Length: 124
Image (cartoon, rainbow, N blue to C red; front, side, top):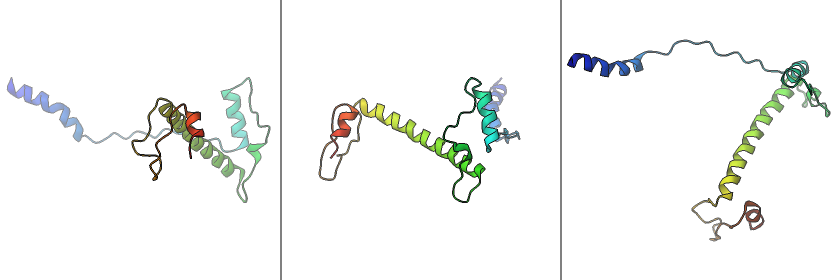
């Protein structure tokens, strides 16, 4: 009985020494041309479809292809979306009265109080 208990106790630990199984990486299709963007827009929102009033899909950076420009716009949109999400969390934290434990300036000024717009207006 004791041997069985020891074997059962060691069984989960033995799984840690087994190597990972090989799985195929998921294939992600990246839309890089205007035609790809049009088909993606029509499949995601058939009511509106592809709508590009400023002709951004055909714009080109200096000396670059349209595909590279679309990829650059995609990465910029992802980056700015992440910054906006972090700013929203910061706004919520600030609105609930949390702030750094240190003084705001080296001169010893404390953090302003009030709502976030009032705090923004009170910055030196």
